[in-house]
Amino acid sequence: MSGLDPITLTVIQSGLQQVCNEMDLAFVRSAFSPVISEALDRSDGIYEKDSGELIAQGELGLPVFVGTMQFGTQCVIERAKDLKEGDLFIVNDPYLGGTHLMDVRFVKPFFYEGELFAWLANTGHWPDTGGAVPGGFSANATEVEQEGLRLPPVKLFKAGVMDEEILSIVLSNIRIADQRIGDIKAQAAALTVGEKRFTELIDRYGKETVLQAIRELKARAAQQMRARIQSIPDGIYQGSAFIDSDGVVDEALEISMKIRKQDTELYFDMSDSSPPCMGPMNSVIATTRSSIYLAIKHIFPEVPINAGTFEPLHIEDPEGTFLYARYPRPVSGCAAEVSQRIAEAVFSALVQAIPDQFFAAPAGTSGNFCLGGYDPKRERSYVMYVISGGGYGGNPKEDGLSNGCSTIGISKTTPIEVMEQYYPVLFEEYSLHEGSGGAGSRRGGFGVNYKVRLRRGSAKASMVMDHGRSGPLGALGGENGGVNRVLIERNGETYIPPHLSKDQNILIEEGDTIRVSTPGGGGYGNPFQRDPELVSRDVHRGYYSSEEAQARFGVVLNQDCSPDIDSTLKLRNS
Image (cartoon, rainbow, N blue to C red; front, side, top):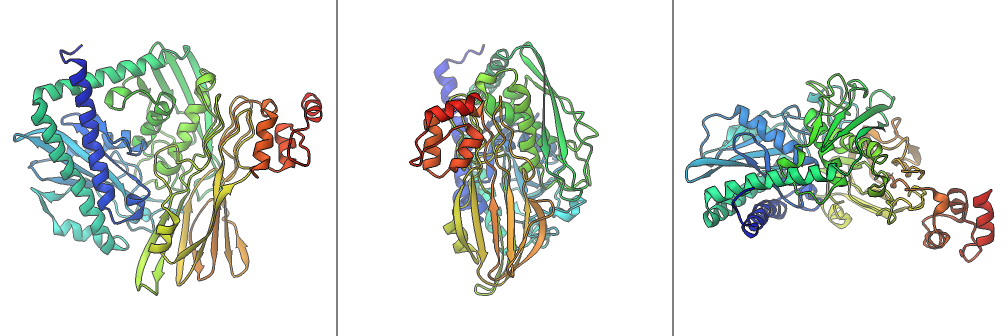
C-alpha cells in the first residue's frame, strides 16, 4: 500500500478525472460537426509516458475508446522522435491501435517542468475522411483504401505550430473540407485545456505525489476487478454471436467465445470464430480487445477505469479470424458493429455463470446511416451522419430501457431539429419500434423508427447496421429482440437492401424517403412468468397488440385490456 492518505488519493483521482472531463467539454463545445457537438462521439484521456497505459479517461467518453486509445498511444510512442513541447500527432490508421478511419486520434506529449510526464490523447469521429462513399461507411468495400484516407502517426503541430503541408494533404482527400478545420482546431484545443488543468493539478500536489497516486490507483483498480471476477465460479463458459453478413458475401459471421475463469483471472479464446471476410466487418485487434474490456465493464460497472482494470483479462490473439484484421482488410464496421457482437458473445457466455447479475442482449448496433449530397439552396455539399438508439435487454429486476445508446458508447442521436437545420431533410416520423422488445418475465426495451425525406437536390445514402436477420439474444428463456429494418421509397417503389441493413451509394432524389427501424433488446426469463398486469399495461400503451400479448406472453386480455386471469392460467398451463 502507498503512504498516501485516502483523502489525498481520492482527491487526486477526482482531479485526474476532471482534467479529462474538461477536455471532453472543450472538444464538444467548440466542434463544428453535430456528430461530435451533439452526438458526443469522442473521448479524451491521459496516458503513461513510457508504456502508454491508461491513467484516466473522461466520464462521458465512449467506452470502446478506453482500450483503443491506449493501444493507439502506444503505437505513437513507438514511432515518436525528437519530441518538443507543443508537438501533436494525428493518426487514424486502424491497424495501429485504432478503430475505423473516421475515428481520428490526436496524441500530444505532456511536459512538466521541461520533462515528458505523460501523454494526452483524444479521438473524434469525423463525418468524412474520403473514400468511396460519403461518411466512410462503405458497405461493399473490399480493401481499406476504399474507406478513406489512412494516416500513420505524423506531427500535425510542431512545437505548437500547425504544419500547413500536412493539413493540406488531409483536407485535399476528404469531403466538406472547409468544415473540418473547425473540428481540427477544437480537437487540438481540447488537449491544450488538458495541459493547463493537468499542470495545475501537479503544481498543487507535487510531481512525486501525483505519480504515487497514479500507481496506487492502478493497483487498486486491478484489485477491485479481481475481487469481482472471484465471484464467478471457476470453469469454462462458451457463447456466440452472429453478424448478418460482411456486406459483400451474404453469409453470417460467427464470433465464438470461450471464457475460462480461474481464481481471479479471466482468459478469452475466440480462435474458432469465422475467418477474415471480404467486406468491411473485419475487426482490428485493438478494437477486439477493447470490446472485451467494455463488455466486462458492463458486467462490473463499479470498478474504476484505468490500465489496472484490464490486468486480470487475458485475451488470446484470434489470428486467422475476422477479429484480427491485417492490412488491407476493410474495417469500417469494426468499432460500430463488430465490437458490439463481441460484447454480446461475452454476455452469452457469462450469463451461464452469474445469471442473477446479468441481462439479455441490448440492440447491439449503432445504426450508422450516412447521407451525402449537394444542397442547391445553400450552395454547398454536406454529409449527414445519424446514430440511432435501440432497446436494452431485460434483467432480473426490471424491463430493458427503450431507445438506449449503443453497447460501445454513450453517443446519442443528434436532435432531429439540429439535423433539419444543417441538412436538406425532413424527419416525418420518430417513434418507438413497438413490439420490438423481446418477450420475457422482464421484457426487452424497444428500438425506434424514423423516417427521413430528402427535401431538395439529390444525395447518396449508405448504411452499415446489423441485427437485420436475427435480433439481440434473449437470456434464460427470454425471446430475442426485434430486428433492424431499412426501407427506401423511390418513385413510389420500395427498395430493401439485399443485405437488409448494409448498402451504399443508393441514389436519393427530392421527395424520396428512408425508413429505419432499430432492434429491441432481448427478453430475460420465461415470458409466461411475466406479471399479467404488466402485460396489460404494455398493451394499453400500444407496445404490443392483444394478439401479441397472448402469443408471446400467454396472457389473455379482455376488451378493456385488463387480464382475463382464468383464461390466462388455462393458456399458460396448457
